[in-house]
Amino acid sequence: MDEVFKALADVSRRRLLDRLNARDGQTLRELCEGLDMARQSVSKHLAVLEEANLVSVVRRGREKLHYLNAVPINAIADRWISQYDRERTTALADLKTALEHEPMDKNEFVYTTYIRTTPERLWQALTDPAFTLRYWKVALKSDWKPGSAITWEQEGVTISDPEQVVLEAEPYRRLAYTWHTFTPEWADSVGLGGDVLAKLTAEPRSKVGFDIEPLGELVKLTVTHTAADPGSTLLKMVGEGWPHLLSGLKTLLETGETLPEPAG
Image 1: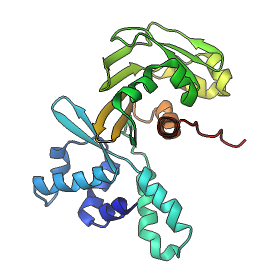
Image 2 (image 1 turned 120 degrees about the vertical axis):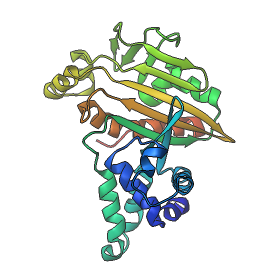
Image 3 (image 1 turned 30 degrees about the vertical axis):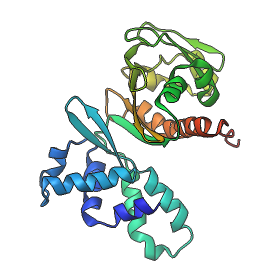
Image 4 (image 1 turned 60 degrees about the horizontal axis):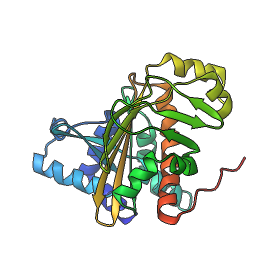
């Protein structure tokens, strides 16, 4: 948590977080616009925020897009605000609330985690159905070549569709594929109501990408789930699902154990 406190201590870095909260996925040039700071200074502040895992960076061609990651702030708020005088932590609480608010024009969910593993082992965890079944309870079956189909097996339901395909596959570096079709059988198996299913099936198919970057003994994994429309019902769902799922992946790779089932 020390890195997060250090990052938040600077007013310029808090302004950058505010700008990303207002509009996520900005380039360095876009973030510099309207700021009374040199480009080099903004770049240094962003590096500190990335080091604290408050900002995730995704490469798109020659550009680097910056995304807000509010998870460390939420962790601080949950850890400290409940134990100390709230009047003394109003600023932190307000910042937590602001960063939890999803901008209406956001059509991507981006999440970064650091795992003590190797790129090869992480790739296996993302593509081996026996592995995905352990932390995801989903068996993903494919030859993992661009254009190939992916079959989803979850809770006794098999989902096959010509549009469930691998988009990109660079072993140990990047994987991307389209999301699965929402069927009535799948909805019944996960306890999803008919009204939510109707909203999901009305939306264009989304896609998810995994960027893998080795960092010494760690591997940086950035997950980007993209929907066609801002305010997508699916994005709201994956915004809650991916953090828990990736926590399970991290636990499995680092300890060999799976997360306990949630109570109830």
